[in-house]
Length: 351
Image 1 (spheres, rainbow, N blue to C red):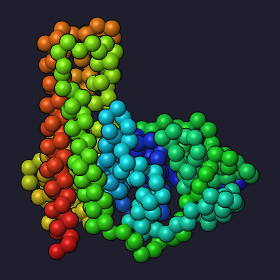
Image 2 (image 1 turned 135 degrees about the vertical axis):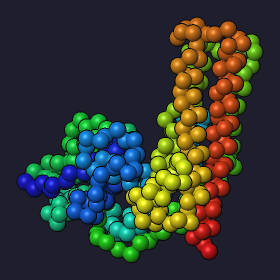
Image 3 (image 1 turned 60 degrees about the vertical axis):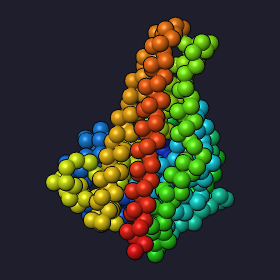
C-alpha cells in the first residue's frame, strides 16, 4: 500500500471537474504549504470555508484558472443548452493543454495500460489526475494512493460533496501524468485572448437577446403556472452566475484607497500589473452589478406565480416579466463593458 499526504481542499463553487481538481494538484506541486501564507483576511473570496485550511487560496486559484481558460465567460443558451464555444472549452483536451501550459507543467495523456502508470506516478510522489466516464459533472479525480489493485482518491474538503466510491480502473478513461516543470507554453496574453473570443461569441450569436426575448410578455398567453415557473428558473440557472468567478479573478471593487491592497494580494503575480487597475476596477464594478441583477432574477423566480398551479393576474405577470427582461438587458450591457476592459488589458500587454 502507498498513500501520499495531500492536504489541499477543493472549491465548493464547482463540481469535481478538471479545473477544480487541477487547482488542488497545482497547489501540491508548487508546495503551497511551504511557500504561501493562506491567511485570507486581506482578500476574502466569499468561499464560506474559513475553517478549512487553504480553502480560500484554492478557491482564488480556481477562479483564476476558470477565468483565464475562458470558461467563466461562457454562458448556456436559453433552456440551458450549451453553446458551441462552451463545448470547445469545458473539459476538453484543448483546455487541459492550455492550463498545463499556462502554469508551466508538462504532461502526458494515457488512455491505455493506465493502472501501472498511475501506481508508478504515486511511487514517484506525484498524485494522479484522472478522468472518469459516466460521472455527470464530477468527471475528474485526484488519486493519491493505492492498495493492491484499489485506488485511493482525495476526499474533498470544503464545500463540495464527497464522491460515493473510490474510482476503479474500469471507470478511468484517461490519466494525465505530470511530467515536471517546463517552459510556459501559454501566457497571460493568450488567456485574455481566449476570454475575448468567448465574449465575442456571446455577442455575435446574440446570446443575451435569447434570454431577453424569452420575457417579451404576450397578453392573453395560455402558459400554465408550471411553464412560467420553468421560464424564470431557466433564467436563474447557475450557468448565468459566472460573473462571480470572473469578478473575483479579475475585478477590484471599492474606493481607490483599498485598490492597491487588493492588487498586492492578487493570487497570481502577473495580475499585479498597475496598468491593469482601470480595467480591474471596471470589471469589478460590472461583475458586482451583474451579480446583483442575477439576484433580482433569483427573487423574481420565487414570486413569479401565486402557487405551483395558479398564475398571477395579467398586469402583475406582465410587470414581473418586464422586471426580468430589464435585469437581463443590464447584464448584457455590463458584459459589453467587461469585454472592452479585457480588450484594454490586451492592449497593455501588446504595447
